Image (cartoon, rainbow, N blue to C red):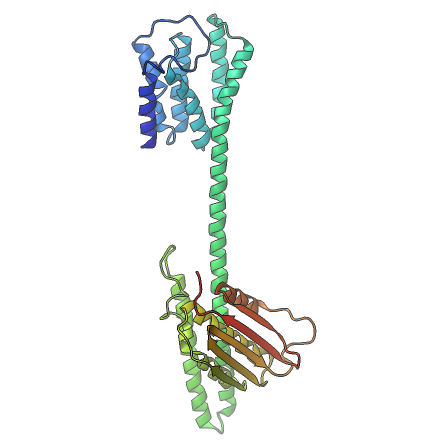
Length: 374
């Protein structure tokens, strides 16, 4: 539609008395009286601009042929002859397939036109033809520059989309690690314990098997939540961090502590203050902090006394401390779990610190505001 308006307006302007004689003229041959053929050639230099984006090579070919014929026949200057400059610009900006062929063909055609005009007695000098060719080349070059910018912008958009996909995959991988690993590890520990208790303590075995069932169901629930996230179409409205019904933090921190205790970790939970309403994303981040800290304690410091202290106020403050040599001597380098956890907390507007305690053991401290920004 914009090109149709441009072609129509350009054609109308080409026949206005004020602009009719102001156009591109090459050759300066003796002027012949304009007739019906001159009108048709003038229209052929403007109307094809309606397809300058859709078929730029075709538009350029028609306009250029009409321009050449108009100049060779020596018709009076016409404003519609400016169409050849617009057609060249459009071909440079929008033609994607025959770019090299167009350049070679247009150059060869221009040389033929210059030789023909010279043979018809044109007073133009070689420098005049070269100058006019440079003007034509500049129009093509301007269009090519615009096209190159568009191509680069498209590449940047594709790269950004690819990076977003990779970030999403990494995020889901972290979710799987944080959500399911601890649950499965607890199942393994409880199953092993039930195996040793089987001969003499059937009551304990029954309790252990019940806890295995509960833990397994919880792991399946979190895994189903993540798979449900993967099933959301691109551009969908669902945000996995903002739907309380889908947020695994709804299970509560006490469940995490009870599960770690059943895995053989002596752990207590202390809660101070009154919980305030928090965004689902902040609640999930707090849940993951405790989950990751307890997972590391079970894995790296089995049997060591662990304390989970949660203070509510303007957000939530969490400190998980584990006694004993939880970390080997030497510089502490956080692993993948703590690194991704810190990124999660920072995205919520909070902060997380983890490291070796001065008196031995290990601690994880985090503060998460109640409200988070997207």
